Amino acid sequence: MDRYKIMSGLMALVAVFLVFIASKNLKVDMPNLGGQQSNLSFAPDDDWDNDGLSNRDESYWNTDPNKSDTDGDGYLDGKEVTSGHDPLIPAPNDLIDPSNLTEKLSQLTLAGIYEGSLKPGNSDYDASLDKLAIAIAEDALSGFKIDLAKIDLRAAGSDKSSQQAYIEEFSKAYEQLLLTFVNQMTGLEENIIDIGFRGFADKNIIKNFEKSSADYKEIFEDLHKIGVPSGWKTNHLDAMKIAGELSYASHAVVLGKNDPIKATVGLNKIVQLWETLPGITEAYSKKIKSSGLNPGNTIFE
Image (tube, rainbow, N blue to C red):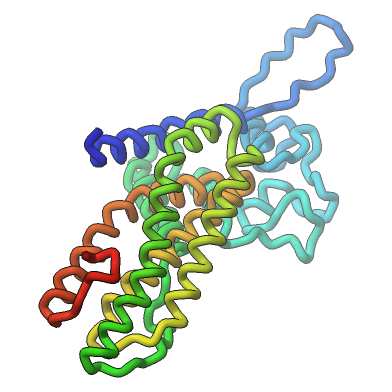
């Protein structure tokens, strides 16, 4: 099967399972009516306790829809959420983790609703929604980036024999990167389907992505130990970058129970990086040839 079709299918599955997750996490505990009939009608946008959080939002934050100050610290649940505090943890040590994109999105959305820009019918609604989506997406992607400027490579000689030794040593680590990535991609479609039905907390999902993340980290460290001739630094950093980003993206999936949005972006990142590897491989192959090196003992043969 054409690999681009496989990638398109995987990306479509990512979108589908996010809907599954949203529907499973959207739960509201109904009040105990003692088995009696009641004329009470439940509307998810009601705010029974007048704390600034709708019943639907209470469900997301796991706060008490009948108690305006769930953690009892003197602040309304709605005020805590919109000011970046956790309504389940008493002040003062209750700031929400800024790296948790799911919590951040919820916080910003609620703030926009109270402020008015994210209320349906507002003239700026579409533009405000676009800005929010872009901000979350940028935060998500920045969380997987490797700062190449901070990587201090070990230098090696630039003569032909030193370059030959370099590509042979690099080839071993790069081959391990390819094998690890291929193994992960082989099981990715099944993992995505499992996440859709059982969520990110599934033990097998956590185990699989923990292993991948650890393997990529080890490969990144192995690449960092290699002495690199000056003319190969850019190529080498490209390979380290993809190993590091794959480790970060896989780790985000491991933490998906607490931050499903970042985990979803991590899955997409893994799929996108699949198309980056051929460029790195081709660049090495061309450079080996132009430098007159022998690819015989490498995977670039």
